[in-house]
Image 1 (tube, rainbow, N blue to C red):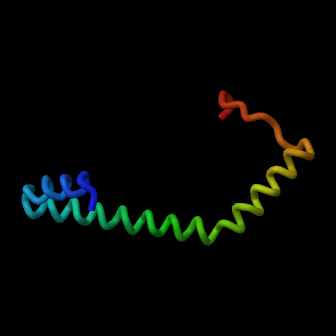
Image 2 (cartoon, rainbow, N blue to C red; image 1 turned 90 degrees about the vertical axis):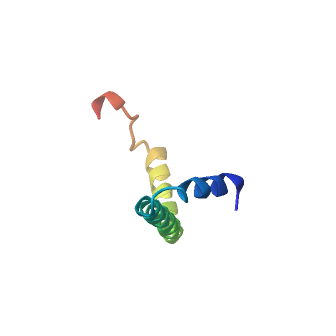
Image 3 (cartoon, one colour; image 1 turned 180 degrees about the vertical axis):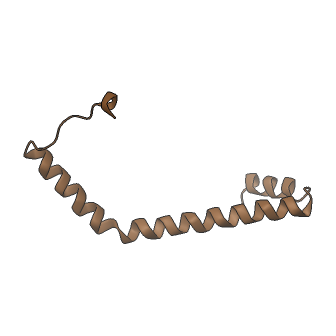
Length: 72
């Protein structure tokens, strides 16, 4: 465990039980969410590569135009 994480847990341990549970649930949710996104990106790697290749081909064929942020 890093010193910073240990410091955070030490401070959190001084909070009332209810607040500790809120922090614990938030941290667990964040860790699970991060794991989910990593898995989804890994699973979509082939699709993303295909889409990127299509976009580059369209650009090479002159089918794209510069992004005008003022028109968004």
